[in-house]
Amino acid sequence: MIDTHAHLYSEQFDGDRDEVIQRAIAANVTKFIVPSTDSDSFDSMKKLCDAYPDVCFPAAGLHPTSVKENFENELSFVEKRLSDGKFCAVGEIGVDCYWSTDFIEYQRIAFEYQINLAKKFDLPVIIHAREAFHEIFTILDRIFTPNIRGVFHSFSGTAADYFKIMEYGTFKIGVGGVVTFKNSNLPQIIESVPLTDIVLETDAPYLAPSPYRGKRNESSHIPLIAQKIAEIKKISLEDVDRITSETAQTLFVL
Image 1 (cartoon, rainbow, N blue to C red):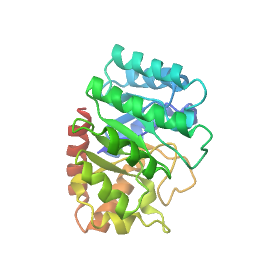
Image 2: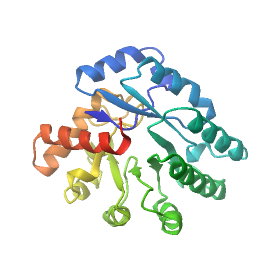
Image 3: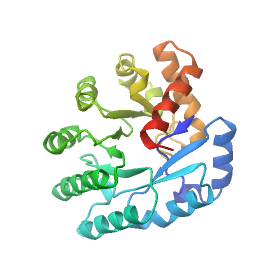
Image 4: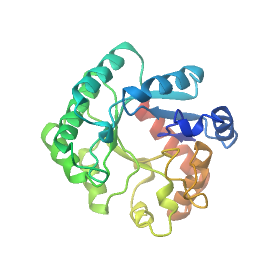
């Protein structure tokens, strides 16, 4: 299985990072996409990926909640890193209207700029869209071209949002621990989503699936997410593993 979104460089893993990775591998989770969020997180992310070059795959981007007055310097940093090295994606990028809208215009500019970086470097994007699907769609509708591709990470939208995403024809949705929450509407949406439109993710250390909700998330929990999807769609865990892994492998060229 492939965890397409895990912040394994986070300080929350400083005490047992190697053990976390080994637990995941033992659980048949053998590849991890590790997106940075800003220049402060980049070195830790890169150090992890250098230590596990066949397991951890780096992505570079400016997270919307890291967009502040210095966002132009941060975007220059992202562009320089992308031009210097090998990355599997531009991310984590997007718009976030949940935590704060103080810098919403800067968020819009940063998102569009990084979409254009993805086009320039021919890379997929990892999109963060918390309570911001309208913002994201407004920008994509204006600048979209068929070579823009990627994943809507930690999908939390409505069925209408999913169908709008699919209209572009080049995006997948990332499904994580939220699909296991009792109060989530995601299972009802997943029922009508083709498995080929889904990739698995944890967003570790955040959003741990049941029965670990509220605790630190880690990549070894991917099988719990995959099993829930298998139950929703009434298919085997092996099919979820195979198809989502093929999709992730193709999208991110791991």
